[in-house]
Image 1 (cartoon, rainbow, N blue to C red):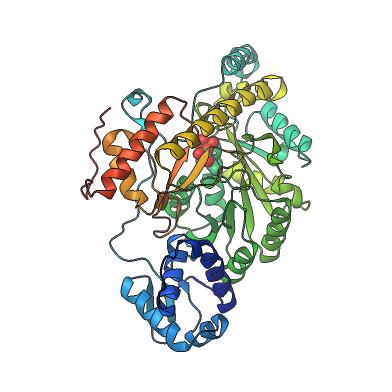
Image 2 (cartoon, rainbow, N blue to C red):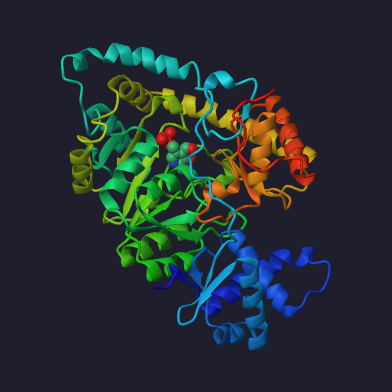
Length: 499
Ligand SMILES: Cc1ncc(COP(=O)(O)O)c(C=O)c1O
């Protein structure tokens, strides 16, 4: 059986290589033979996640003709790639991309540090931060007053409290997506929502298309659920989705579900445009793929001129192609553990039926607090506090990076909580290891990739305030030095932290 899961056509590979060449032309200091430059181009496309691992490459003759080079050049490039571990071939099955052995993928999620460890370790890995006070406490105090009618019931609401379902439906309707409460199920955070959808939509072995890179915990969750991930590269420079790549993935892999983060994508911070949303929904509908849009970051617009496009669901008036997932974790506070699914009523009924053998429901008091925030002035006031804090933290992080690590490259996003950072040619995994030893925690880029891509990246967050963020970046600069000078031993990182 062939070892590849998707294929790239000769014209598409030529296009990818051309864009790569434009980006790297400035870096090329000396002339290299044509076959080497082609091999390097393909290797970079694999490492950057733009050419997923296990993608079948076109036949040598076709590629030679698309690139206007000799077939010998292509054959020599393929041979070089095979020698470097970036290509595998079998007679009769063609050649497909690979990563060299010996770069194990992280097999565990990155657990949040216990809050009491703050002080010795600076955590730039967990995308949560302080609650917006006094708004959160005010909401809880109000919620305690609202509790009495519920204490006379058994308290289990697998679809969510009617008051919160109603408030959520109204919010969607106000955003231009008419919604009834029957289209909402309240969940335990967005993670609870994605987990419920994965159980419903992806029986073991189903294909699920994901942006590449994508949110690490959802990649873990989907892999654990037995899904076969089909990575689809993001467009370069925060330009959103690469529609031809999506169309090809729908055609080649016919995934059952696709998981996307249109607003301030985690980890890149990209914001998909109106046109991209319209085209992706149309392509998913035509392919029979259910598009799950995660709106966890939607409220975190940090620059006023960001111009948030319409929700993905607004491009699906029929209501059967798009399922939306949301959460209060980023907008308000992760400690609430409240999220939701918006879908067609029959999908919600199936999810609710399955919930009685999962977690049964979400806590009543937290739902009442969120309903209060959403129906009063509290929501806007609390979100404004969170935005202002994330904006200040982002700006302080960017200043510290430019000052202390000038060769690290990134594009500053207009919203969200994440900065996707190239680590100046060093291994992001080794920087993450070194950081753990000296008290700064960052996830390596490979956590956000499928099969070893993004080795040259780390993800940083807008969750730490100045002056701590400056100390965090000083430690990262030290970690980078340790990697550069070979001072980070291979092997397990000790789980003890030093200040
Ligand atoms: C895109 C995305 N989805 C989901 C989550 C997790 O959300 P929750 O805390 O609501 O489970 C996060 C947290 O970082 C996220 O960035």
